Amino acid sequence: MSQRLVNVSPAAPESRESAVPAAVPPGVKPAIVTLTAVCKTYDNGSKALMDGNLTIRQGDFLFITGPSGSGKSTLLKLLYGEQPVSAGQIVVDGVDLTGLRGDRLAHLRRRIGIVFQDYKLIPRRTVAENVAFVLWAQGFSRSEIERRLPPALKLVGLPHKANCFPEELSGGEQQRVSLARAIVNTPPLLLADEPTGNLDADNSWQVIKILQKLNAIGITIIVTTHDEQLIQRSGQPVVQLCNGRLYVPTTYNPISP
Ligand SMILES: Nc1ncnc2c1ncn2[C@@H]1O[C@H](COP(=O)(O)OP(=O)(O)OP(=O)(O)O)[C@@H](O)[C@H]1O
Ligand SMILES: [Mg+2]
Image 1 (cartoon, rainbow, N blue to C red):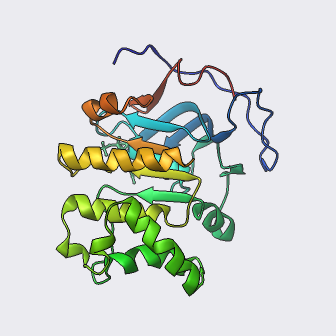
Image 2: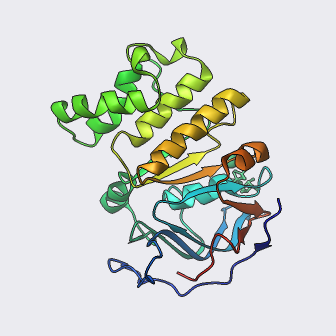
């Protein structure tokens, strides 16, 4: 990687309730994710993230890379509120995650799409049902579900597989169903943990192209991957994790939040 990498110094924390976003200079997009001096130590003492500082702006497409065990999945789990931070502060889409639980956490999660490496599709449900399930669980009306389903399946190139079961699909197709499921409720933020980890080069590139399409309609995309070739081919910015430390290129975070 040719970009110079720095461990960005801590930025001033936003307000804890954070309903009021920090002032943003003209021409700079507002932040959608802010990490300030974030540490994560698991109960067994494993230090997965140390003094992490990062600002991701609305509409960005960012790769997070690093060796196995460097903390990539942990970082996404912290952003999704699946794991609490041990120290520091995370603000996602204007919401301070500190102590966030129950309905307030569930409400935030509706605005975050998630894609997993192992797809996590419901085996005895069709493609259409797997995607619709998210909307149904969030209380969307039947007519709204019927309105949203076709464009989501079209975006991932799978309208013709709507009535298939996951086991009738290839790995690449299953991953694309999981993408449709993650974005069918049009979240402003999409987190994808190694979405190409089980795919060959062609299928991996298809997934990245779909993510780029989603990014073009304004969704902020954060993707973890080991695949250096994919990162270089995509031309998107990349943040590195190494032994729990975040290294952010100066070209990506030129100003403090
Ligand atoms: N639930 C957990 N309990 C204790 N330690 C954990 C837990 N989850 C992860 N860890 C540890 O935290 C560190 C970071 O793990 P993480 O899963 O975030 O890495 P990763 O970069 O996603 O790795 P990979 O590329 O293999 O998916 C590792 O040392 C791991 O052993
Ligand atoms: Mg991982």
